[in-house]
Image (cartoon, rainbow, N blue to C red; front, side, top):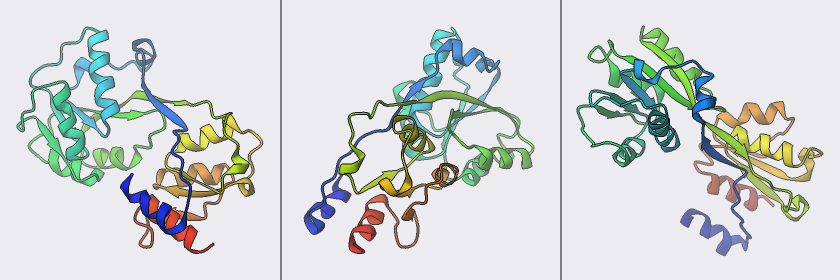
Length: 231
């Protein structure tokens, strides 16, 4: 939140933070439709805390005992540390990268190549970047959706009262369209943050004023500052 405060003082901007969707774990019934047996996998790949909670919740509901030998490969240290909520943190079985798919594959290397991996994701995730690397490395893996995006009711919002919105996720675009089916790009200026949302915006016929991150806009707050400076 501190990154946004200069926008209030410097430009007198009014800021409102409102989630367009929430993340919920799949029910055991929903998960079974994927025909994946969690007990078959000896290594799990996590990219979010939501996926971690969903995994252990599903194991409990499906009466699967997670073995102490299970290995966990996390995209970042922050995600890896969150595992302490569910298991005893042991460095010999928990590994974390620098946020890139390449770092995960590097962690696996020859030492862990014999594991059977499960790449966890949400229903809106695009895991092509990491799955293509796993294929190229000859790793035995599957992908499983553990969490889903649930659109929030935004009908109390008056879009005409806002000049700008920052969207981070393809589910933000989906929520915008579902809540405001008559939405037109000229009704509200849009800033996109993150590479995954660009395609969703293009498909919706929405061109963002600023695409971040970029050399000029390393954060969403910086992207908004660029917009306000040009007004």
